[in-house]
Image 1: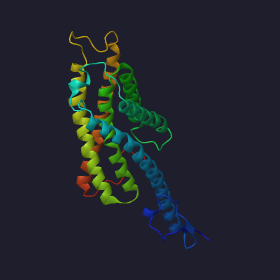
Image 2 (image 1 turned 45 degrees about the vertical axis):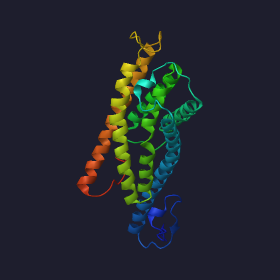
Image 3 (image 1 turned 90 degrees about the vertical axis):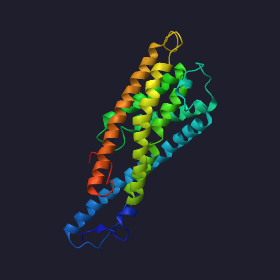
Image 4 (image 1 turned 60 degrees about the vertical axis):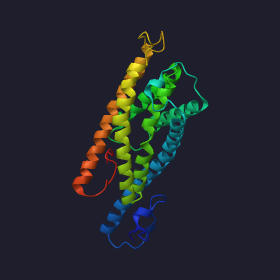
Length: 265
């Protein structure tokens, strides 16, 4: 006898556990239909698990970054990132650096094992550039600037993963709401604040009064950081374009996002 998948639960509730089989199928056409449904449910289950793990991962880093920004007087003044350089790196800055570096080092490895997306090359480039910025900014003592760069790239990520988790769990209304929050946060922090209030001022304030690039005698290393920052900004513009593209698609269709625009499948 042909077998079909148990339909006592809708597929939206089959995210965590795999669908079960029953013996109610009467023809091959129905079996084929349910096989396609369960393959889609299993793919969504894997994506759901990946996204919920990332919510936890990104959430921890974002909370620490927010705590630092709220408790450091220099966090909103780019000029103070270099005033009195070199600075003493506090315990909380070191902890945030450790969390951030571990996060991006993990992502750099994990991206090769997770379901591949169309922006795979861009994602690898982003993680490599971020790891280089974190390492060099820590070694050279540019930790104030490094913390803000890390935070601006962290704060939209939990919202994106929450939206994706809700989407895979078939909670479209909540997914739409969090996607809207994510899109607004990403475009503001990465495509407006980051280039205007971080990259541009860094080129001016990271010099001594006599015009020599910090740190004295090793200023050429700063240009390695600057190069990576421009790479990150180029990638932010690329992803900003994908976000605007998805928003335009939603407006035209009148319904919320149906999946990650970067998925290859």
